[in-house]
Image 1 (cartoon, rainbow, N blue to C red):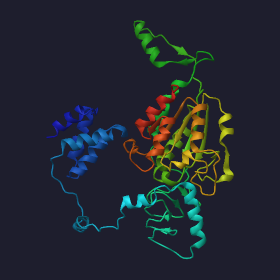
Image 2 (tube, rainbow, N blue to C red):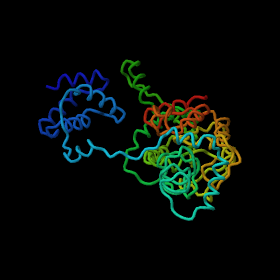
Image 3 (cartoon, helix red, strand yellow):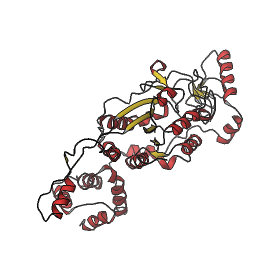
Image 4 (cartoon, helix red, strand yellow):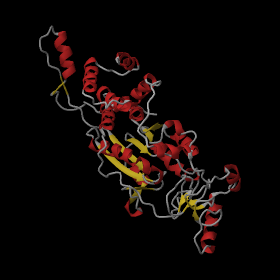
Length: 399
């Protein structure tokens, strides 16, 4: 009864073999699908899909084929009732809030915060003036102001221009059980940049040997070549903390894949927050005492290094365009962030930026202006299997 589904999957670009299909039929005969469409979906995906990169293709095909099948999941009726009657949250008129903050620049915001800190003597929540939580005040956290300084707490709406509290950053090096095989496979593409210039020809070349043997009427003809040497040098720069917290596991996979790879002659890793400035951190905790001078690091590297920056690129535009625009309230950057981005681009012709946010969101999310400016300076790709593959292809050619 599922024969049409078999052919539909193959027509959708999934390479489903007959043996895999028969294995699926045997699994269904044993009841491993639990007599439900959801169970059948997971069973099909486990048996028929060979690579994580094909999951989305399978999902689209499954949805298209079974779109008219009526099913109900085992959700409690109480939950369905709750979903049918949502509680209306307090709302703020966006245009009115935007008009209130129109024309405020970074310097004026600093002056206003210092004045509030001198005058405020008690807790405030939900207001529009004092340092507190919620509301439309430009100072505090979890509020709705389109611009301001986050003080403590977590950035709920990702609108803060600067953070005036000590930040806690999650370590990318922590152990993870997630599979990093796909990242390692992508890094293998860089093997094409290795060379065979030196040494004796003592490494057996399997495919050329097969071809030469066939050309020699089946008589074995061995083909040898010099072994490849790793000439590739890679610099990884990670955005750490803040809005990058949701992507820590993904960045951890990339970090581990790079450090477990044997395709690099040299590999260096540094950290920044939102944008590189005059120093780069040695650890993702980003303590100032564990940092190095950015220009000193770059000047110590030859232009043939490949450079990968990893970050969402979403920040206040002032962090890129203004002196003193760094999100750290207690740190004054003497050069705007874009200066260091251009310094990287000028120094290294093989440079890419990997963004963990979906590519479709880059043009409309908060921070779209900073992302657009960065894309003018550095080729940007999504941090996905496909995006990493495209980025590594780009690293193999000069801009």
